[in-house]
Structures are given as C-alpha cells and as structure tokens.
Amino acid sequence: MELVVKSVSPETLKTATLVVTVGENRVLGSAAQSVDTLSGGAIAAVLKRGDLAGKVGQSLLLHNLPNLKAERVLLVGVGKEAELSDRQLKKIVGSVLTSLKSLGGTDATLVLDDLSVKNRDTYGKARLLVEALADGEYVFDRFKTQKAEARALKKITLLTAKVSVADVERAASHAQAIATGMALTRDLGNLPPNICHPTYLGEEAKALGKAHKNLKVEVHDEKKLAELGMGSFLAVAQGSAQPPRLIVMNYQGAKKGDKPFVLVGKGITFDTGGISIKPAAGMDEMKFDMCGAASVFGTLRAVLELKLPINLVCILACAENMPSGTATRPGDIVTTMSGQTVEILNTDAEGRLVLCDALTYAERFKPQAVIDIATLTGACVVALGGHTTGLLGNNDALINQLLDAGKLADDRAWQLPLFDEYQEQLDSPFADIANIGGPKGGTITAACFLSRFTKAYDWAHLDIAGTAWLSGGKEKGATGRPVPLLTQYLLDRVGA
Image 1 (cartoon, helix red, strand yellow):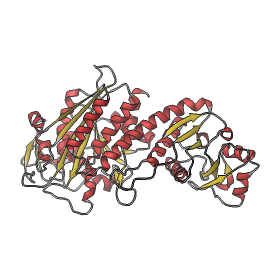
Image 2 (cartoon, helix red, strand yellow):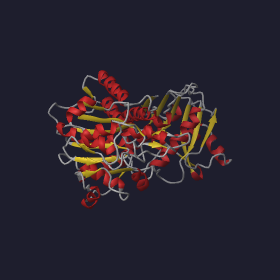
Image 3 (cartoon, helix red, strand yellow):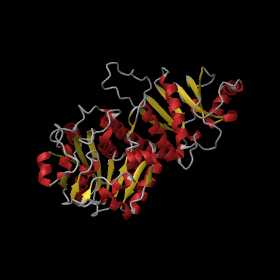
Image 4 (cartoon, helix red, strand yellow):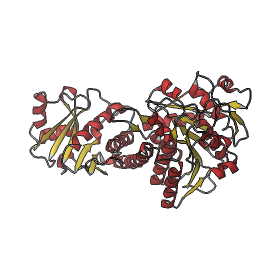
C-alpha cells in the first residue's frame, strides 16, 4: 500500500474517504469541526440523532456531504480521554481498516494531528499508526486454493501540520521497513514444516544475499558443524532426516573495522521434543519453534531496507528435533564448541543446545553486543503470558537499551533475574552442566545455561515463547515479534 504525507486542509482534499475523529459527548476533532462547518452542520445532526456515541473504535460512514471534495466521510470514535493509549490507537486503526476494506474507494485520508497518544510525540504516534495499518493488511493465503480478494484500497494519505511533515515521513519510512520485516518473519513462521526446513532457510538466506551486495551469506552444513566442534548442535539434529544448517549473514553498512552487533536466532523448524516427546495436542504449532530465526531474518530485512550505517551479523541455528533410532537419548553427554560438556536430561530442551554453539561461534566477530532470540521456554509463557517478551542478560546497559526500545516500538519486554543462585540448578554429577534445571524458574535456568557460553561479550536473551505466535482461531499464526523491538534497538544505536 502506498503511503503519502501531506500538509493541506482536509476539507479541500479530493479523496475517496476522509477519516475524521469524534469523541464521546459529541466532541469533534478539528478536522471534523471544519467538515461540519463546511457541510452546514451535517456531522452535528448525525450525532444529535445518536447514531454514533464516539466510543473508541466505533465508526460511521457518511455519504454525499455538501461542499466537500471527499466522496465519503468516515467518523471514527476516539473515546473521552484527552490522550489515547497505544492499544486504543491500534483499535481505532483496526476499525478504520475494517470499514475501508468494505468500500470501493482506492484511497483514504487520515488526519494525524487529531490523534493524541500518551507519551508519544508526532514521530511516535505516526510510527505506531503506520505499523498498525500494515499489520492489518497482512494476509497469508499461500496454500489456499481460494485466495483473498484483491483489496481496492491502494493508497493512504496522512495529513499533518507543515512543521511535522519531516517527522511523519521519517516515522513512515521506519514503520514501513519494520512492517516489511515483520511480514517476512510471519511468512516464514507460518510456512508448514515440510517446506520450511533448515535447507529451505539456507536457500532463503542465499537469495537475500544475492539481492544485496553488502550482505555476505554463508550456509554451513553438518560436515562443517563437526569441523567446528559443534557437538551440542549436531546432537539435536541427529534424529532427523533433515540436515542441520548454521546460517551466517554478514551485513556491512558501516566501516569495515567497526565492531558488529550480532543477532542469534533459534531455528528449530519443527520440534517434536525428540525422545522426550511432546503431547500430540497442539504439536502442529511447533512449526513456530523457528520464529527466533525468522525474527532475525525480518530484522535484517528492515535494516537492509533502511540501509542503516551499522555492521550486523545474523547467525541462525537451524535444525529439526525428531525421535528416531538415531536420535539423542536422555542421559547422553555431548561436547559443545566451547569445550564444555553437557548432560542432556531432556531432549525437549533442545533450543539451548543449538544456541550454545551458535553463541560460541559469535565470539569470532568481536561483537559490540550479542542478542539471541528464541522460543525457548514454556515457563516464560506461564510467567509473562502472551503479551510480553522475557529478557535476561549479563549487561545492565544493554538490558535497559532493549527495554527502552521495546517501549518505543510497543513491543515490550520485561527483565527477569539472572542471579548466581539459579546456576546451581544446572549442576550435573556426570558433565560440566545439565541441559535442564528442574521445574522451578525454567526461563531463568534456561538463560543461565546460555550465560555459560557468553562470557566473552555483552549479551542479552529474548525469550519469545509467548509472543512469537498466536494460538487457535482466525488470528492463529506468527506475530512478527520482536522485529519492532530489535529494529528500534538498532535504530537507536545510530540515532536514526
């Protein structure tokens, strides 16, 4: 969808649909007031009849208002508060999109300045609005024989004051890049596991590399993993007919000598649990266990579109966790790339086994910071539900930067402790470390496990088990998170 930013009077603009705001108690936004005056009180008359209460998200379409160039006027309720919350703004955008999709017009115009959002300046609210518009446009129908109908709506114009045009254009540019990245993340996550396996992800990475001269891509097979000493990574994959892949995508947007940021994504393309097999109910959703890797793909896509002046290395640890006669057994001991030995007590705690070798591999890039992203623990879903990403790490400054980025991007995270006392739960009588730490504090002990492999650099861990996808119903599917958080973090590093 095309997005245009203008600074003109809304009542003078020729458009298929002009969207204006109405609050509770018949309070008209400035654009609605202008339209009402020009049309001889048409909006006031409708409100007097009680056709629209002005509650958040309510809408009413008006046709043929006199003296206007707009073919239609869509009234949308913004409630009674002086300022909207982020969630209310998204609800309003959703309502507007639903109404617009049912119309035949190819364009619509929204008056941005009539929307006030708590703790957000013009850039912030414009960014949130454009991302919400893009999110509402997402459709995944690749495997439907009956495709979704082509949408008539092709262009949206945002109106703002002259002094705000540059901020809104910058916000729209950032938001559209993030939306592109989120769409890629969702597409990869929503693909079925018989198509989206480690080899497929490797080919996707190569295709991305061919399209961008400053992106170098390497895809390492199981032979290379063995040469690197990645015994833990290989142990996860050994029960599957699908070979593992370590995908390394190196983006050079800054000077060659500048230290890179590193993103490490868990890419378990299907997780049965292995010999420690999962229950059958809901196992289809384990195709989403590669959403950490998918979010790294999406963040890189946003960075490429924005041409950020940074160096960024993306490492994807991709494997399939299957039970078979060759699969890893509970009680097996493996040697990681770091040289540490791990007793595998539960083969369903496999994400940390591929990540630990990928995190060791990250050392060679001498990074500014390393962030891993993984659908790692069900315990995180219990602790934080489906709204907030778990965040742990070994550097307070990095943690705070990610928390701040999450707030600005409305893709929030919450810090959990990484105290030394939890490390003892990973003690093994037979190896250096066990891969599980018992039933208590599962998200924390999983991060404790990873922390054993991240002592050489500043590191943060995002557990997206609760936020990477939605379960059940029409909304089921990958969410695209935490692409907004990660992209905002990188934008902040360059002051973009």
